[in-house]
Length: 387
Image (cartoon, rainbow, N blue to C red; front, side, top):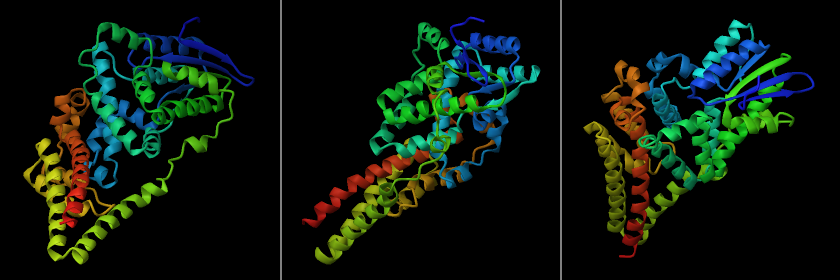
């Protein structure tokens, strides 16, 4: 069958039919089903990992989410990133009236009908996001987070012409590619490495005839990597935090404490007290501002303010975590919040209204405002030393 999004590749040991789809296109759904029915392959590979498949198939899975456990395991940023990406995709999908990832589910269903093996060929999204985060510099992280939050506004004024263009391509990959142009290190892990991973998985599955269903944005990269030897372990591991990242928190804390000690012993007791007081007030006020902006529970605001002076001096504690745990305790997400999550992430109002996303946003915002307070407090303390 001739189609611009279907690529037939012949290798020494197998035939691969590579289908490039748009994740929110009716035409893609129909094309995938037609090709699998006609070709009757031995294996159908889909661009999904187990976590993404669960998110599509098991909408009730959100009901089992333990938000407190997410915070304690330091996975709040990961979950928030996933929700922001899902938000962008679902809002586009609502305009086109199709379920995101439907072509993948239909591909799996059609594979069962023709007795083909189904292979989840994509790298786990947790690995992708963590590899991305670990490789980014501080300024890149700030830009990346900004781009993610801006995606909440991106579909407000999208034109019908833009939607037609999205139907011709892989919508999510286009969004990631846009970010990748601004942040090359993000593109390497979000797109390039996944091209390699997908190519390796598709190339090495058993079976003489393979149909691979992937986002159109991945097709060129997969085709370029099919004949290459790829070190799968190298691109499927989570790199450890760099030495500087591991020790920076402790070094920073030691320097601040050293500044306090210097103030007490070399500038007098009163100066030392003033320095500690200034640090406490500035960090507490900035942390509480973050909690107030998100209309948090009064006890969350208090907990943020009280924890900030100490949390900023301890690398293993984050004020945002304290705020998130407090908010989740006094305004515990209910079943209705989990039920509404799929729809709430499609609007700015819903993101702030839903107790789950609000807690995740609270953690990020309070950590940000507390960090601002830290860097505001340092020059104030240095100035006190000169008096």
